[in-house]
Amino acid sequence: MDGGSAKSLSCTVHSGTLIIAAMFARTLRFVDSLPPPLLFLLLALVTGVIGFADYLTDTDATFSALYLFSICVAAWFLGRKVAYGFAIVSSISWVGGDILGGAEYASIWIPVWNLASRFTVFIIAAELVVALKKFSSALEARAEERAAKLITEIAARERVERELLHISEREQRRLGHDIHDSLCQHLTGTALAGQVLVQNLQSQNSPQVETAARVVELIEDGIALSRNLAKGLNSVSLSSDGLMEALEDFAANTSDLFKISCRFECPLPVLIPDPQTAEHLYRIAQEAVGNAVKHGHAKNIVIGLELSKAGKLLRVIDDGTGLSALDGNTKGMGLRIMSYRADMIGAKFTIRRRDVSGTVVTTLLPLERETVQ
Image 1 (cartoon, rainbow, N blue to C red):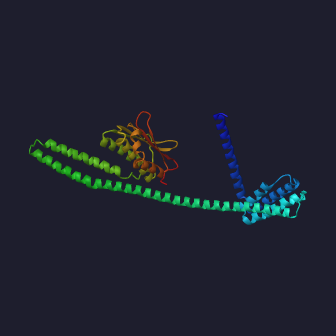
Image 2: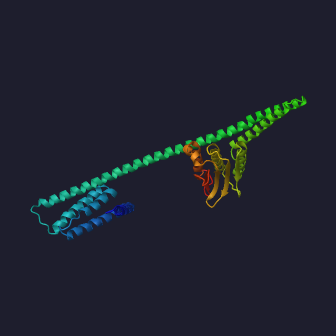
Image 3: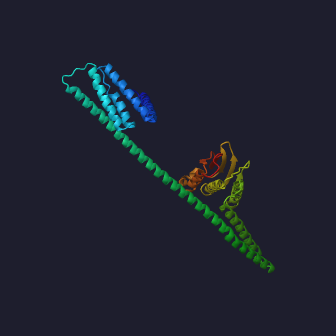
């Protein structure tokens, strides 16, 4: 037999085994669904039919396996006592059928021995089935207990992850407020002092006027950058169009801060009613752009937000070095947090290499999953 034939035969045998196993499982489920009284009557009927067939065939055929079927089913589904009863009836039917069929014995003790030995075999089979049922029940109980513990541990881990995420959000907001209320105010005061210095130098016709004015200009640029940074660290506006506004501002600030081309594209208005969902989508876009700049060294980034038949689609496309720059970071916190944020809002998160160069990060929010779970 060649390799192809052997493989075909193996597949056929495997398929046949799976079919038989599936039929057996369906049969067990059907039997388990029957009420105990009905199952008892069916087993009694089966035992009677087997006993009658045993009588008709005299001693030419053995029906031990068929008797064992009723006994084992009774032991599994109806308990030990019922199985013992079927064992007694089956033993008597078996030996009685042989006697009524004309079997001759040299001694009266032979049918007694046959009766006792067959009853013993039936009892052993019933006890084995009862022990197997207990073992199966204990195994199921242990599996359910472990599953319950695992579910509890997963729920606790998810709570911790959510809390860590919320802590991160709160810290970002606090940092944004501190930058806006402290650093920006300090820089504003410094700019005013520098302006006074420029005026004094002008009154003295000092050649350092231009240098001082340039310093004031740089401080004002620092104020603008600080305010943009603070705005980016704060939450998305609570209005349904807040995500669009936030992404547009973020794209403009990224362009100014990193001196690259970062633009926001949204052909039609995409409203996100739930503020937490909008917040997660905004943070995903932030992280994707940050990866594109830091790891991919991208010069052109497009943040797209659009409606599709499948849902609301957030896409970040860059022309950086692609996923190879992220290979060492694929198990880092950034990508894990993006994926986790997507899971929290019921969205599908994917990241892939562009056909030309760069990376595409996609987050698809199904239309029926627009609120945080």
